[in-house]
Length: 385
Ligand SMILES: Cc1cc2nc3c(=O)[nH]c(=O)nc-3n(C[C@H](O)[C@H](O)[C@H](O)COP(=O)(O)OP(=O)(O)OC[C@H]3O[C@@H](n4cnc5c(N)ncnc54)[C@H](O)[C@@H]3O)c2cc1C
View 1 (cartoon, rainbow, N blue to C red):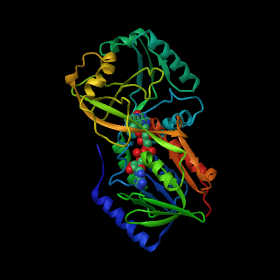
View 2 (cartoon, helix red, strand yellow):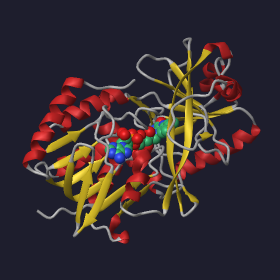
View 3 (cartoon, rainbow, N blue to C red):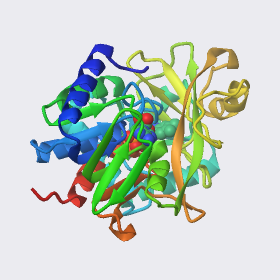
View 4 (tube, rainbow, N blue to C red):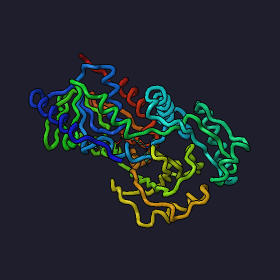
C-alpha cells in the first residue's frame, strides 16, 4: 500500500542539499507531504510557477499517514453542517476531482441504506439535508432498484448518490509527485521539522539535517499539525485522536457501488461501510476507537467487535470470511477543551504570526476537499515579489 521510488528520493534529496548549501532562504515552506500539503504545493506552483517552494515530509515516502489510511472515497457532501468549510469545500473538491483527475476516479456511486424504521427516519433527514446542502444527483431507490441489492443486504429503504466515487490514491500520488518536479520545487523526505523560531517576520526551521529560513510557512502536518503550532507558541488547540479500523473480506462480494449505513446521531464517523480498490476486494470500516496517540496496531478481538455492525446490513458474511487489515487515525481537534467539528484553516495574523498558515482537524472529507482546500488556502496567502 505504500509507494515510493528510492532512486527518485535520493535524486531529489541530493538536489535539495546542493540547493540549500547554495541558498538557505526560501520564500515558502510547506510542512507535510500528505494530500493536503501536496495539493497546496501544486496549486501555488500553478499560480506562481517561478516561486521557490520547499516541502518537508518526515517520512521516507509521501502520504504514509492519513492520506493512505482511509476509505479513498470522494464524498458528495451529504453529511455536513450547512455552510461549514467541510460542506463547501467537500462539494467544490468533489467537482474538481471529477473534472481534473478523471483517470484516477472510479465513478461507482453509493447507496445509503436503512434497515429498520428508526434508520428510515434518519435516512429521510439525511436526504433532506443533502438536498438543502445543494448535493447533486441523489435519488430515492424504487422497489425494482432495491431487489438486486436485497440479495446481499438487509435494506428497507435506500437512496443513491451518483457523485460519490473512489480515488486510486497510490496512482494519484505517484502522478502528482512527478508533476510537481521543477527547478523551483524542493522536496525533502525523511526530514522532520523539530524546531521553529519566528523573528522579524522570518521563520527559522530546523531538522536533523537542514536549517532554513522562509517568509511564508504553511503547516499541513496532519496528525503532527498541533505539535508544529506548539513550536510557535500556540496552545489553544489539542489533538483528539479517533482510530478507524478496516477489515478485509476474503471472498468476492457485491462491489458495483459503495454501501453506507445511516449514521445515527452521536456517531463519531459515518458508520462501517464498504470500500474497494483496484483489486475489487471489499474492505469494511472504519469503526471508531478513542486512542491516546498515533499507533497503527489493531486489537486481537477486532473482528468480534466489528462483526455486529457488519452483519446487521451485509448478508452471508461469517467472521471467518474477515481478516484484520489496516487502520487510520482521524486528526480531530479540540479548541480550548471543546470538540471543534469543522476544518480549522487559519492565517496566523490573529496570533501575531504574519505569513503563517495552518490546517488542523483535516479529517474526513479532507481527501475529497483537498483540491478545494488548496485553492482556499492559496487565496489567503499574499506574495510580494
Ligand atoms: C479512517 C479514516 C478514513 C477516512 N476516509 C476518508 C474518505 O473516505 N474520504 C475523504 O475525503 N477523507 C477521508 N479521510 C480523511 C482524509 O484521509 C484526510 O483528511 C487527509 O488524508 C488529510 O491529509 P493531510 O495531508 O492533512 O494529512 P496526512 O496524510 O497525515 O499528511 C500529513 C503529513 O505531515 C507529515 N508530518 C507531520 N509532522 C511533521 C513534521 N514535524 N515534519 C515534517 N513532516 C511532518 C506526516 O508524516 C504526514 O505525511 C479519512 C481519514 C481517516 C483517518
